[in-house]
Image (cartoon, rainbow, N blue to C red; front, side, top):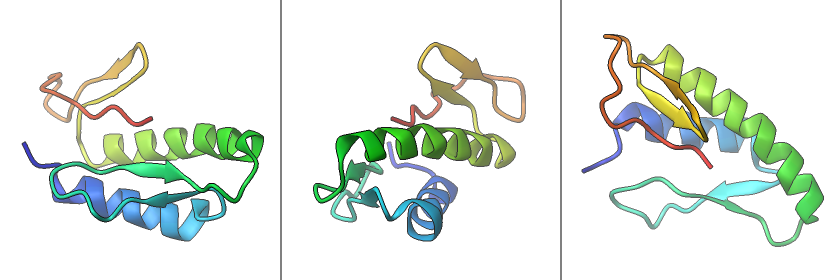
Length: 89
């Protein structure tokens, strides 16, 4: 199953425009989207930025009408369902 295009666009835009100081998108993936920690930044900085990134990604995916799971929290898609869903980490 391929990641919906809007997910990839949102992920790329968020990382490039706001979170590139702590992470990068692994562009080699074809059927999934992966965000990786930069190895040249302290882990504490990455973890702080990761929490903010998770919140922004969650908001963007929900605004796009997608169902999302983040940890134990589940948010239905625009039709009120839980079909699949993304798990930002």
